Image (cartoon, rainbow, N blue to C red; front, side, top):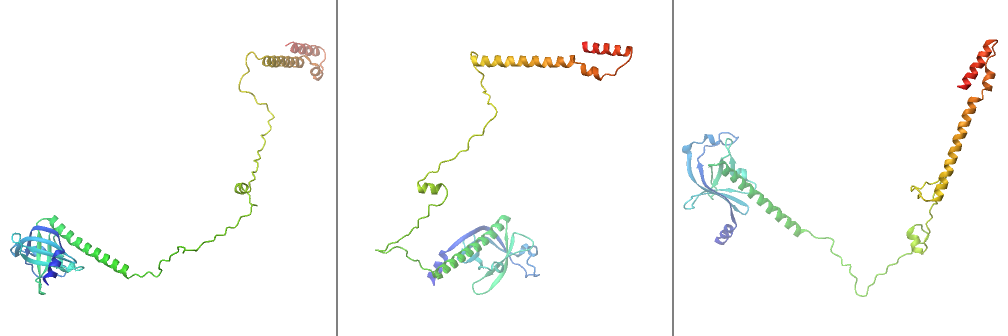
Length: 276
């Protein structure tokens, strides 16, 4: 029995230590809603000392101890999934709680617990939550290991290695060489010539972008020919224009005939217009 107690104590892990807390004697619960620390009187304070939160495997213990001697004043046991039954927050403050303490013989009582600072009360809540998470992870891990051990593989591994003296025969069919494409031509060893379309025929002369050299006799000859053609074309244009103005016989035929002086005036007018 002593060996089992020593083994259990060896797995204890301290989660939180608060140097000074206060313990109150609280009246019975007045309503079903919860406790209120405003109903506790300062004269109801019955003890002050150190608080320790200890993890013992699945169980978490809240121990109230004497700071000098380390004697245990009271203990609250928090079992997995029963935190609300052991620790309860009050309705009107975040620094006060109600603990369910036990003496180990089945008797229990409810006391009030108060922290001096809010951050101490916050750390107290975090320590209890961390213990719950740790227990949950351990249970899930054990369940996973148990399921893996009970799992039976209905498909055992098959050895596909060749035994001594065994061979593998592979038959490959030859593909016909009647296909089209570069791969077929390469396989038959025949190279198909590439047919290129001829360049389009151009009816216009392509003019060289570079001018001829200055001493080129062919260029001088071509220039003189172009100049003579240009001069002759200018003379022909001037001759046709003069003939259009001097040849007035069709115009005289179309003029109306007038008697007396009128004809003389028309002729003189026509002659004057031709002279202009």
